[in-house]
Image 1: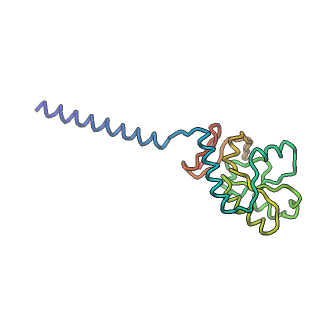
Image 2 (image 1 turned 180 degrees about the vertical axis):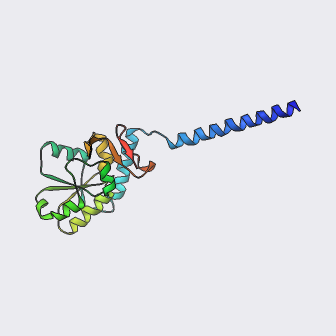
Image 3 (image 1 turned 135 degrees about the vertical axis):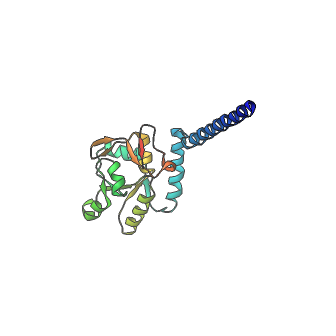
Length: 181
């Protein structure tokens, strides 16, 4: 009888250990940490796929935008994301689509740049405005790319390193930024 109890006990211990190892393996797959280089490549690949849907829209890189800002060029940044996303963070000085469209005539002589999380929604928006005769650029890679040049972001409490994304698949922010979804 004693041998049976030890054997059953051993099987239970082995079962528990195997279960724990399986849980560790599953959780480690979820928390795979990719290099910044890999993430940047993913942003470029995804943006290229999206940009193919609006080929007439000109892009501006995050580096070009940052250079324009340093040169104090007259830039209007239009954040096409939802209010919930904009609550997490925005590029300083950016305005919402509603604010932009209410003062469209005021901005015609400015360099207009639309952005979102990666550039798909802003590209679609830029395409719509181009069809209406407005010159507008799409920010290539948008906020995800912005994080790799340590671009400044703010929210209602001040400077932040948070960026709204849509889940694990979209967690392509630079290491010193925090994804929020």
